[in-house]
Image (cartoon, rainbow, N blue to C red; front, side):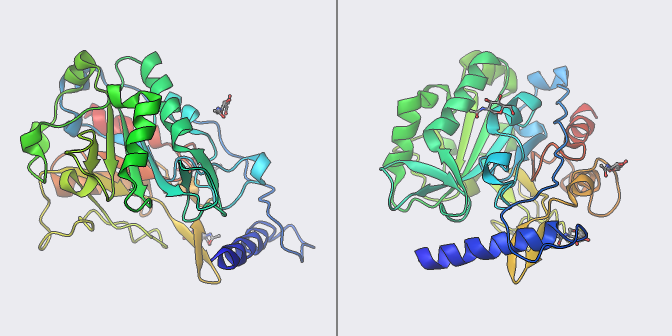
Length: 331
Ligand SMILES: *[C@@H]1O[C@H](CO)[C@@H](O)[C@H](O)[C@H]1NC(C)=O
Ligand SMILES: *[C@@H]1O[C@H](CO)[C@@H](O)[C@H](O)[C@H]1NC(C)=O
Ligand SMILES: *[C@@H]1O[C@H](CO)[C@@H](O)[C@H](O)[C@H]1NC(C)=O
């Protein structure tokens, strides 16, 4: 397993060099460096005041895919990273959903780490650090609501999740749906308004992709009881879909549940997928051409006959994701 991980790691290094040294000439060896990423400074979200009196389920929020997997000069701009700025910067800029994968490091202490696919490839820090960054933001921005979405790769480890929420105190700021709305009964009109969430100070909403038990922890919600997601794993700009993919529904039925629209593009090298950074400006553009976030969001809005709730992107600082956020929310 470890050998496989390192083999994969090595291939990623080669992929990195192959992709990023193209045109610069002379590089024949593999290296772990994207020498030329030039990440743009993040823009900022423009709040729409009238939406505070509307439901959580009536708004569009920008989300970051693999929010803790950050490319920095320190990790050689690792191509396992999906973002260029850490979660504190993401939140301060206006990202309102953070997606991440929780793993138990087999060689580490008994705590959850946020790694993409495998902790040997990219270790984005501990769950506790992540939750503390969210808590810090919520405490300094008292009318904001933040959603956390975790892929749970910790099998049978619900207690480890509960411990992290308890130790950081984020459990106290977390929203729990009414008991009778569990198990798929919570529809769009059952969600509180932002004003109500602010008044009760329950401003963190957490979903686990699997392994939730709302009797044990009523604030760790079973994602697919409340939300559907569109396809991910997109490898060409004309593949973005609006149809529910997880869970699937018959035909083109759109259930009255929260929607998460996956809008990030993969590049491929020797069969391995990694985020397509070079195209991110177009992928995250507010324009209405094929492959652009603006087009995808507008298409989903018309298919759903309401705002899509979460638009999940890589490299949120590129393009103009907050223009799309404003365009969705202001009209
Ligand atoms: C996050 O990034 C900002 C600037 O990009 C930096 O000032 C801050 O120290 C970072 N926070 C952490 C926890 O690394
Ligand atoms: C990124 O996507 C664009 C558009 O599909 C494509 O032209 C480009 O080759 C991709 N980049 C990589 C490194 O695959
Ligand atoms: C990014 O895309 C926009 C159009 O959506 C374009 O005007 C701009 O020049 C692009 N920026 C870069 C750095 O490619």
